[in-house]
Amino acid sequence: IKAILFFSFWQGIVIAILAHFDVLHDVADFSEHQMAVLLQDYAICVEMFLLSIVHMFAFSYLPYRDEARLTR
Image 1 (cartoon, rainbow, N blue to C red):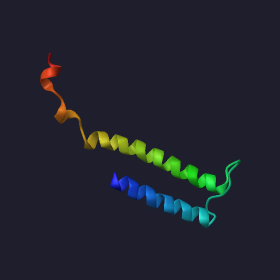
Image 2: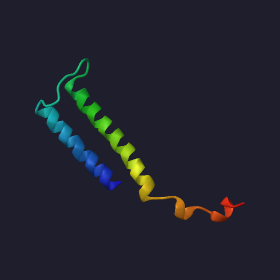
Image 3: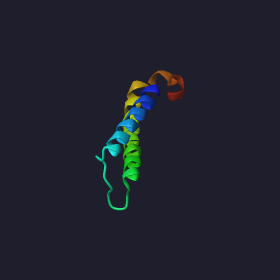
């Protein structure tokens, strides 16, 4: 959890720097600030999806299954 917070913080800093140096531009009806927020939110959603998949393999439920209950 600390790593997620750490990386999302620095990801926000990088996006803010990109917006400051005009790398991000207005798109359609979205301002530069809205694009930065949109990019940050989208990146976090994608990262959380990928981390949830990794989490299933890293912390398996199998050691905690009650085998006796399953065979009844």
